[in-house]
Length: 155
Image (tube, rainbow, N blue to C red; front, side, top):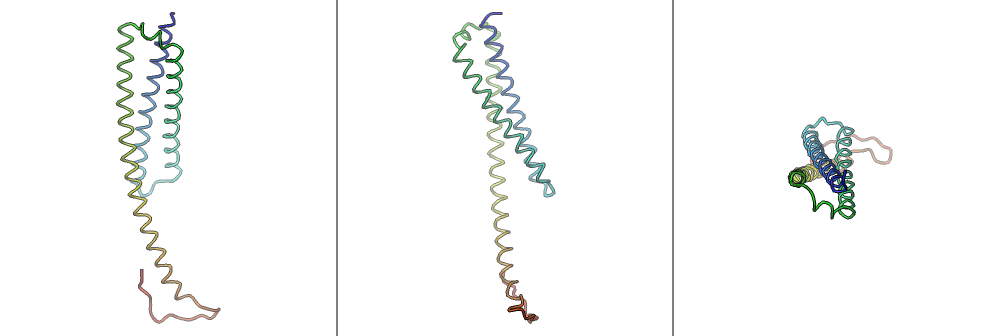
């Protein structure tokens, strides 16, 4: 096997792995979106999906480093690829670009959704905190029990 064929196969392998990693990231993002929509989701399950997404992105970074090293070491051999190999690399590059674009869009949509949920949750927590202040006025002071005559409806 020639150096050109070896470099070509390695590049194809790396591009296939990168496309697969983006597809796994997209699946995990869809799963996370579903989990966040479900009010009965388990936090451990959410953490597991977040970890999967993180693993995918770390693997993509590792693949990118491998592609950079391959291009540095054997890039000049890739110029001599056969027409079929060039078509395969071109097809895989387009597949990776489409998957990366889809992953970016889904991740951005998820970020917006989580940000909105965070705002709603923050507002609900503020309401709870304000209610706590109203309830504290009815606690016995200085160890003497007392019965409130009226309830504070402040919120």
